[in-house]
Image (cartoon, rainbow, N blue to C red; front, side, top):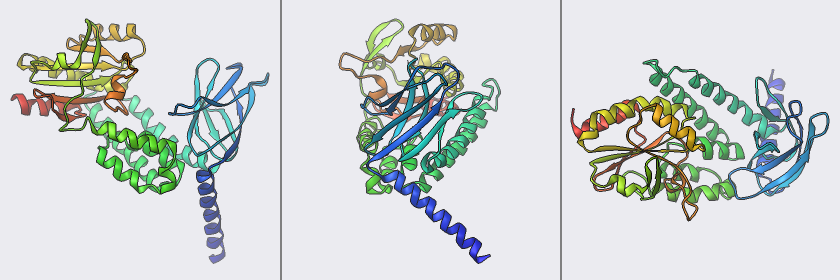
Length: 360
């Protein structure tokens, strides 16, 4: 029995060492052998995600719908594989060695074959299962909000545990940047950031995130709201114009394709109906790419408050960047003096805060 235990400890140690080596290498040479669904594309591209870098590798798809991407990266990073039809096929974590991309059913693709991606895929599958369960909830069900909150808590716990377990490799970085940090305060982000070893904090994505924390901090509770141009259904204006003369303004970010946003819509209707005559206004900014779809949705759902769609201004800035958003739905409650007095009020929490301010 002792020898069996010793054997598995040795194997586990070797796996950890392999993962660490693959995660920390500064010269990552990789091969990705892929297979597409029938005639899905004629060429594929590998792109470093969330950076200004262009495509770092390309490959032609042969008559058997197969391809091989060969390339190198200077550091561990998240990457995406796209096709020449403009579709994002899958994401992966760049690591040294030979990887395989193949279709998964009922849809999509997965990259496997390396210790980093194989370990990350285990976590990702658990998160996808929870997400799918959330999307199956019926918004008309009176308990859907409670069920969604329970699933969200489970999701956050899985992510946080996985970051703890991978604090010294790219898996932890990926999960922290794009999952765990959502909903954190600037102070919480900095504290978690400092838990990563120096070699991880020096990655390009982490350096960019350190800058992002400074932006995020400008819109925390206690700060003054940041004015910006608005492209509303009725014409162009500014957020300052919307706030002028109002006792409270809820700056709300959403999109027609965002399921959690749909769960919040009944509460926005209730809040506006109850408090609009007392000096309450909602300014909803949609992240939709289709102005037509956005307008039609607003009209069909009787969203009678101020509605705008996010667009880049003359300086290339947009509302998402100005307010340092990581996810939606997101909102900011702005007081009469321009101070942000609350953030991300959901469901009954929003109603309770408004009742506290305006009275019953």
